[in-house]
Image 1 (cartoon, helix red, strand yellow):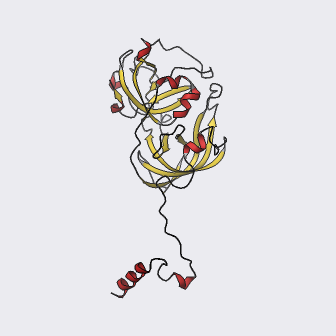
Image 2 (tube, one colour):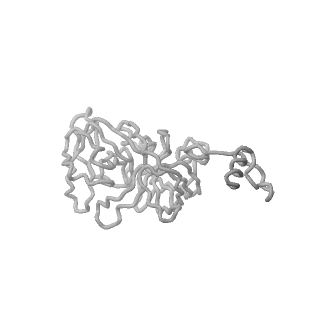
Image 3 (cartoon, one colour):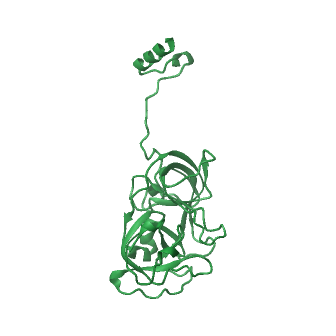
Length: 275
């Protein structure tokens, strides 16, 4: 009873915590941080026009980054094509709001993150132009390298940003949406996404339906300059059961924008592909 009365008095006092004066503690203002946190947002460190733009190799601190996808598919079946984690600024559809995590660790150490988990991150901002091959001029793989992620709270995965698929033919335009969840409408593919490749990878050129029948995919070198045809890829899910064929209309395609040699859209589940 004595403890309960003491707690009640402490709550009524409000300004000072009970017993704090015995240890010389000073009163502190109660503060509840906003959902994004007080640190930098991804778009602030990644947008070339931002005053806070981070240089390659710079340590950065990001708060309020929500996981939008975790790559568990491993399309090559050799353990080398899984593990990527894609995060974006919570509550934002600003360009440059997404980034991928390379070799992350988490607090607590046994945390296994999934879509909707919101994190604070400390790591090295990187724009790599030659890993493991040379990319096109002024084209980069953008990552947060070896970040330490601290769990904040659960949220929902953000809605996709509606973009024009034509943006992804040009790296500078498509870079704005890199590692973000996007939606394109009324597109078609340049070849069957049937999974017959020996590597296990599926990659089919994406084109606007309004431009007419898509041209056959043309071979190009990774270092060739843009423009380059963006592709539908199976980085995050098995596309083969969908039976996607050349020229079949895709009314809506949702996925994460990824990059390696050219820009891609990687759907997460079958629900991301609406025929």
